[in-house]
Length: 429
Image (cartoon, rainbow, N blue to C red):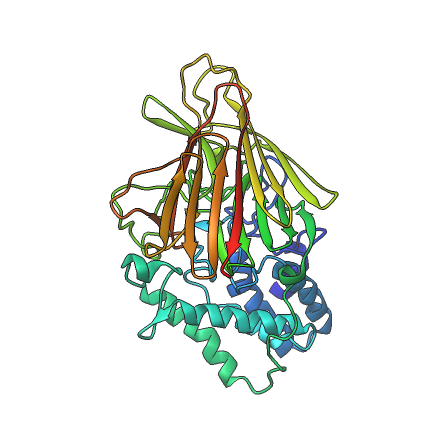
């Protein structure tokens, strides 16, 4: 009976499984259902695939193959599940979702339908290994460098899926010869049922979101025209990764406590403060985003509003800004301008927490250029406005979701001019 209902819980046109909201069929103001990539690929689709194979339900198998194909478009080339935008983003661990089983069964057992499913199972397992030490799975790539202990729930939950694969009687051929969709992607694609865009050009992979379905009050994934992810092929690394604006223990028994005294969001954003209240586009559920791909350049233009956690503006009439991203094969540019006239005395800041482990060298070349040396190259950040790095005890901020350290670069916007920041990579000789 439940299997027959599955077709009613798949979005159009991309067959994304929905229901990770309360109630499960609730629609947002934009008319969008609650979709969470992490729970879909690591738990719900797993179980439905197991049923479809066990019952030899060919019709359901074909439907699930369509759904798996669409979900797979969100896997990053390093095997990470890009859940920067999902409704249960609060449990995003970069490799998946904290207390789910893992994607190996659904994608591994369906690899005969699409060899890239096998690549997904392999790459996900490889990423799990990178996050494992002494037999325990850590909640993100930088937990170890930050000295944050692992939660045992991650380990026994994901061991379950791997054990099931080892125990399965008939497993299709699994390898990583067939590329993932995002490894070979070029251009921009909009997923209207979640109002999320995936962009690819040259070595860059980016995710932009204005998805307005909210799991719980004050629990927020990447939205408001935010850059949820920026990944670079030359470095084989993520440079930006969204966090919750405010770290909240959504499930107190299934989430770890923040080890830092100060909570600092990792999502690139615009922000201001008034009377100790924080206003940012990360809470804006009404942002308007336009995307275009012309003459080799991908362009995102967003009109965003700075609001607090209760969607209230800092003043009558609101505070509106333009926020844009330009992606070509050589670099990514971020532009920001305050549209509301700056007659209120409020400082508007562009915050760019660039993912970087604590051992990496950070060099302030000039007030308008910062370089971060990584294993496979140097990330260069150039601005036409002076930048600063927020002072922190360890030179880095850290957020448990999705588990990255970052250099907190901040830029105060000019009152009536556009600020432009360029990010590019110098590879090692």
